[in-house]
Image (tube, rainbow, N blue to C red):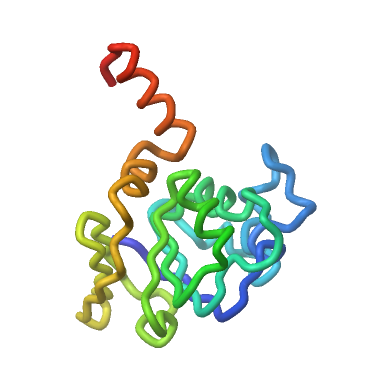
Length: 164
């Protein structure tokens, strides 16, 4: 079970991962610091971010979804995503789900269960479940592999006759 961390609309990539974040050293500790400087201390492995419209807008830096993944995010749920953030998240194997009016359906600290296999997001605190549009099969394969690079490596291994 995950804990929901709520954010509003138009959370841009600079708020998620400031440009001062070093990919190796400070990316995790500065994650979401533009909105909540102590976020990295509260967010635990397997927790989820729930946000409003246009999550991940701004620059195309892959470090934004990468910081959330390295912090242990199980999924990002938002009313909508900036297109480049959505693609970058999938490319690093971070599941993203769109649910209309997401911030009205969850509260800070709600217990959440994400069932990726059928796209059902359950708010265990309210007892209400929501269906998110499913990803096409090839995107699910990329997420399952842990990202685009790992997905490509699996394809190469299969082609060369190596087992996984």
